[in-house]
Length: 372
Image (cartoon, rainbow, N blue to C red):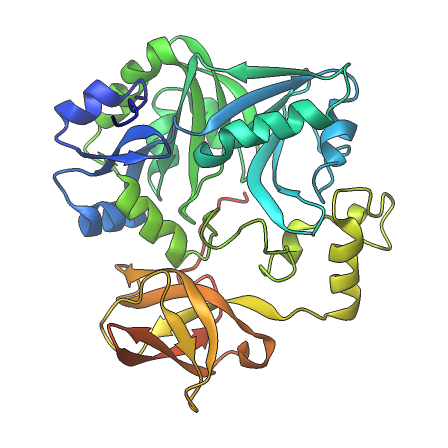
């Protein structure tokens, strides 16, 4: 007997809007709408796309020691994260691998944490096992999560509250929308300017309908969400990142705060720090995450093996699709460190054929975050 899928507060609206629904991380989620994946993708790049991301886990951490406690679990500066700011982080394990990536926001009276849907249960257990008794974990189950992304996102959201126009990338504020307090951050998973909005579930559909009343705003499903994030070089946990991959191998050095590095004011102190800091110091890893573009029109999917010109197997594709904005196949994957130079030609095996690809710098499509 199949497990009953969970639904988000937007479920009835998705059905009304003609969404094609699929199981995803235990939820019944929209993979695409009537526009189709390619048009949804391009609409987000050109105008404003609306995304239901309510399947993600939302948590509040309260207590005077909350920042120090979570900092012991991530290689990121959380103690000095200013109020009203958000930061990307990842949980690490004893082997230096990544057990999930997450967003941490300082709202002054609490830390607001968003974790991946598929890792929600294990992340909560990890926090409960490692946070001291004086840090309270509040699992938020009465709020939806909505993202509006694209060059017209700010103008559309500003129709409901002009205060959002003052925010810059990674700002986070409590803002009134549709008569209720929402947690709004200027961030997202598409490479475009935009906002992520935690809204009380009871008002979620009203907020979505008010935004959709604008011709510039269209729903975007999981299909285009994946192609958008891949074009902008953003990792998907469980595919491009996992418990066996270190941040150094994953080319996420930018995500390790200066304060937590070997010469930082709070060096190490996170799980697996000895291994990760040693990799940074020696630059010795067996593989690295790279970006690849296809020299043919055929998309190269996750799981395709990668070969060098002498037909030696050298790596694997972890995400791949046809990039609608780029106009060619794009992928990311892991290869031995001898093959990471920009311009290196590799070959992906697709249905018994070897397709030529070239290592290219990510993001494949320039990120358009609003920095003021």
